[in-house]
Length: 258
Image 1 (cartoon, rainbow, N blue to C red):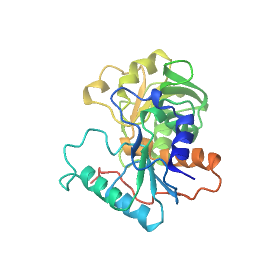
Image 2 (image 1 turned 90 degrees about the vertical axis):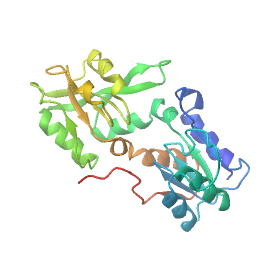
Image 3 (image 1 turned 120 degrees about the vertical axis):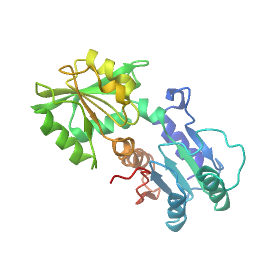
Image 4 (image 1 turned 180 degrees about the horizontal axis):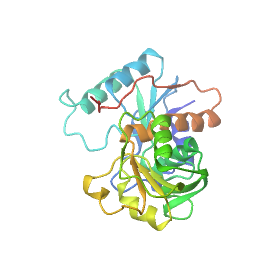
């Protein structure tokens, strides 16, 4: 099993042209012809994750968030990205990232979130070509009171502090969502007839003006996308039943809560 075969499998599911213009998804570093001893799956590439890869015998790390999001001006030890690159090179670790292409793919990150919430009839909020797009909207099996629904979201995603606007004066049935930084889709959620909108990040001023229109829930960026590694596992296990796969045991969320 070579790195290029893993790359091809991931890109069949989430083609690179689906990524946003600002993104840098795809092979971050490593040799395409290198044999894969095992793949470690994670949300973020950190020094601890790379050490974990060495300890468990994996020479490929597959992440959601790209390590090399912006160009490096040097390769030293001043930033965590530089240190990660040096460590990966020293230990012959290849790194591949499936980011906004995996967000925008049918069956991708947002569909995984929807699945864990039990949403049905799931479609894209903003469609690109009918087969991909930004955010999703779907229906709950049964209506739920706003506070009951948000408590379930908080529990399902192990959210330490869930932000929300004032409680909506009606039950929740139709839910729109976008993992990560998805607040740009709130108007699309309202237009789609959603009773609630979930995302990982939302700017303060965007909370204003939606009273009695839509219930807003903000989980945290890490919390909303943490199950992406499970999605990556499912994609690669189906493609390569014999490939050793491990999901990181390290919680890479850089935000702590007092």
